[in-house]
Structures are given as C-alpha cells and as structure tokens.
Amino acid sequence: MPSSNSNAESLTAAILAGEPAVGVHYSRFRLPAALDDSIDAGVLGDAPRLLGDAELDAIAFHGTSGSWTGLAGDRALCGSLTAATGAPATTASLALVAGLEALRLGRIAVVFPGPASIMVGIAREYAAHGIDVVRSAVPTAPMSNPEISRMDRQAIDALMRPAFGAGADAVVCIGTNLRSAYLVAELEEEFGVPVVDSATATLWHLLRIAGAARPIAGWGMLMAAA
Image 1: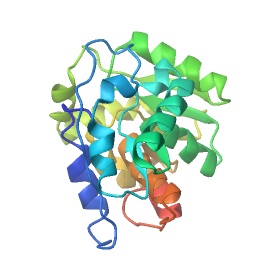
Image 2: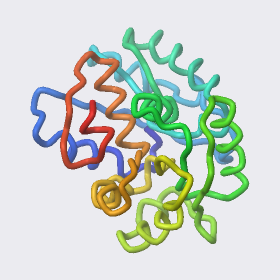
Image 3: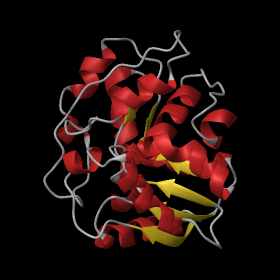
Image 4: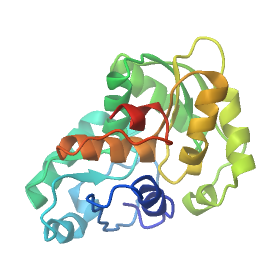
C-alpha cells in the first residue's frame, strides 16, 4: 500500500473484527510524484517479495491509479505480484470493477477526492470496460493524500452527496485513503442504491481470490453479498 495511506489498515481491521481466521499483512511503498504516473513492479520495489515471505493466499496493490492510467497496466502489475509471491493478485481498481460486475451495475456515479482532470480519465477508462459514469463528485480544491485521510465525516458526506441522483445504479468511491466506507451503510439505506468503496472492494476481492469469501454485514451491499 502507498506509504501515505492511513485509512486502509484500520478500516480492514474494523471490517474483519469478527473474522479471527483471516489475517491481513501489509508492506508499503512510496507513490510517484505525479498522479498520472503508472505503478509497476519497479515502483513497488521489495514490498511484494517481503510479503511473499508470509506465504500469502492472495495479494493486492492497494491503490486506484489504474482507474485512470489503465486497467491493462493493473493486470500486468498483478502478474508481477504473483511472480513475486506465488499468490493470486488484484488491485483496488480491478476489485472495484469486479464488484460492479458481481452486483450487475453498469451506470454509476463516481466520488473521487482528486482533480477533475483525472476524473475525465476515470470516466474514459470505465467506458472502455462497459461502465457508464453518469455523474461525478470531486473536491473544489486539490488535496494531498494525507489531507484526504484527514477529512472528517461531515466533509466526506458533503463530498459524496452530490453523486446521488437519478440515472445512476450505484455510487462508486475511488480512493483508498478516503474514509468513505464508514458512511456506506447509512447512505445505501437513505438513497436505496449500492455504494461501492474502493478500500472495501479491495478486501472483498482479496477474500474471493483467496478462496475465503464470506458475507460481512454492516459495510454495505458488496461486503454483505460476498
């Protein structure tokens, strides 16, 4: 996971609090300076091999850059992760798409805590995979990854609400350092549509490819479906 991410570990622990048989382990790497830089094995360095020492059942790149740099690059990265660890691999971006496919959702609104220029790339990449982005919600000013993690509940709620509306079958939150997962269940209840969070989707897909899928209540429709 990116060295600047302070959400994923605590969130994953919270979701798995009632699942003592599932162990999750982490290694960190430093993100490139530019958001449009692709992530490859060279960027990750020794992080995958160090995790491989734990004899994993599955491994994930806990980042969403493939949502705009291209899912093909994420698939290539998965090949590198599997070569380094011997475990089946996924990424946050591939997990989101897999989650949408599992829930049979094709028209979405996207919440993205990054610049509108990157959001254009996300819509284009999703369209190439048959997913129609009908609406998006982005911040009014640029934020760093640590600033995104420090957004409080009120600020996250304010960012997410414009994404809900007619025409979208689901709301997708792209950014594993955005603490949107904690709002998913209540927003699903209020608006009646699935809300798919990238950090949650990563765990959901990891459990699937590890052969350990199970429904976990309280974290939205995707985790409850397993």
